[in-house]
Length: 131
Image 1 (cartoon, one colour):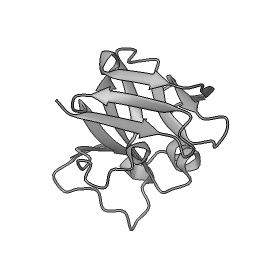
Image 2: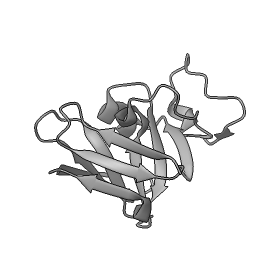
Image 3: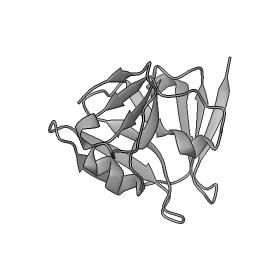
């Protein structure tokens, strides 16, 4: 069984994951662009029981376009987000793929809010695409 460790930049906040993600997606919404400082966010969704956070997190809640909130857990020392909880899907925890620092991490299979995507971004052709 695969085990991965997501971590903030300073290593104080981590999330150990056992098993494969149930979904890997990229999101082009404006909240994700602002939150990451990039043209999109990439995250992997895991079953809550497969994720073990460790360390002290600060939180910040963002209400998405559909009216549901996500609670982001980030390190108060270095500021990196390590995981987040989606109020509409309490059985899952999402982890930004970059927190794994694993270049071989699987590609996204879902691309959402593509109507806000930067023109030069080309999601995987075989991914599910949502406007």
